[in-house]
Image 1: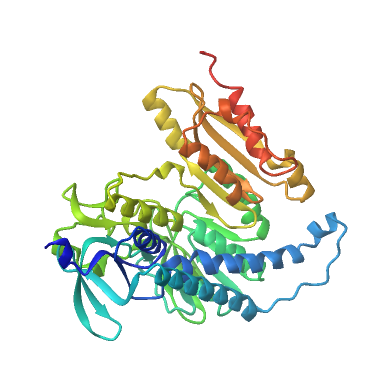
Image 2 (image 1 turned 135 degrees about the horizontal axis):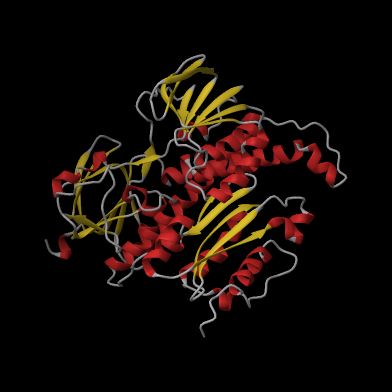
Length: 482
């Protein structure tokens, strides 16, 4: 097929952040672009994920601050009993979603992107079938196709959801009601953030984790400190090493808990509601990938470092995939970065993505963030490449700004090479950790050494001085070989 006979230069299937950034970037560089979306524009992040959940966390965080009489008394402040309206908190989240979704849609329209509402699927190389919302089914063609269909919540076998008493984060962001007692299955970032919301708003929480410790995906030292405040300090009943083997929706919700190792029944719970926060799975089943020979790995689409889809380990011409559906780092900003990288390669600019330098954050109160290698990964790399690993800690309790805020419960751990000083990663728990991590992410991206970073001057008094302290500590430990 000649280029002149294509309907579009680029067709993007999915209008989440990965698809949005890809479509916008391509249109701004003169390509004729269409984007196909079957649900709401903006995908999971805007409609059912990071945007509404952060609005809920912002509102519930204010409630938590005003209700913390002991903390306020430290400033000499005595507040009246706090009151809140659940519906208005929910409305705040819904209004933010509507605004962001509208802005995103208008941005694409202004860029000249054709928006097609319907289900997209592959019908062969450079051919995309669309079942439009109106019921019309047609095929459109493009020189290049980008798959950006995202992910959906994972519901383990044995769990019955009804969207009301047993639900996922998709429904939780609507905050339709506040259960007196809610069980949260999973203690990753989704479970932790919603535990933060629900406890602030007066709900009793039981957290159920199948692995042998709560917060299993976080740095162990960060977990030790964070769990003391975010879980133990909030009187959350946290249970690790147990599996919610059966959950039956209703009033009450019935939960059967089994030992993770033996699978023997160990307890029965009856609660008002259950939030299933057990991770996410790729949205790839309806794409008709088998039509072009693409084999997924647990539903994830294999790609190379340029975002090209792989078939039998080899990149396929004119087919790309970005975002959660690729299973790399399932974060909105990763998807957005992948989208622009894919388009740059379509435009002929050879580009890849540096996953190590992409930060992640959990927006609890206080926050948790990380970038680069975990300590276990760094130790493996040190053994493989024959260097000595360095690790230093910087404490919020030694930071003037944190002390002024009466928020000195926090820790930053910095990982680096003792030979070259290269920053390998960082893990932070504490006030504004999500903002602090970006400075270290930039250093990781540039493969910078603490030998130079230690001389960078930070504003006083600010939380950023935590990073300066860590860099200076690390620089003092470098191997004196030069």
